[in-house]
Length: 161
Image (cartoon, rainbow, N blue to C red; front, side, top):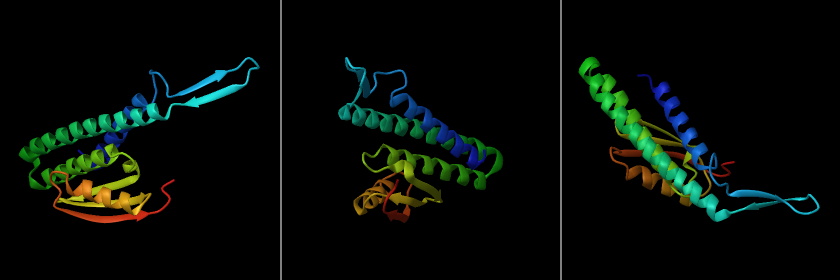
């Protein structure tokens, strides 16, 4: 299994989960009403938006965790056929998926803008976060993920937009 295929699968899974939780087929957090004169008025229910985003993060975390477990199982099966090099590559991919899931699920962190890579338990974080506190949170979350032995933090603080 190639890493690019795994990344594509994880990205597709994340996108589908976000679409599901952010309003497709559900009561929307954004309502548009017309008054008697035909003017449109837009109402955004911030609590619903926050709740939907939190729920989406939790679902993404669960899905990515499941994906990481499936990749780890695949690593075991490949190890039986191809040996240690393939196993290490798949274990790195599983660790990357677990870290990314935890970062995405973290409230206010913007983990979707953080690139994660790993090799032999060393996880590298790249990207831009909104504050020094976000940077510390990302590093702390990464360090607390099973399988991480070292974190290389290349995150920049600045406008993430």
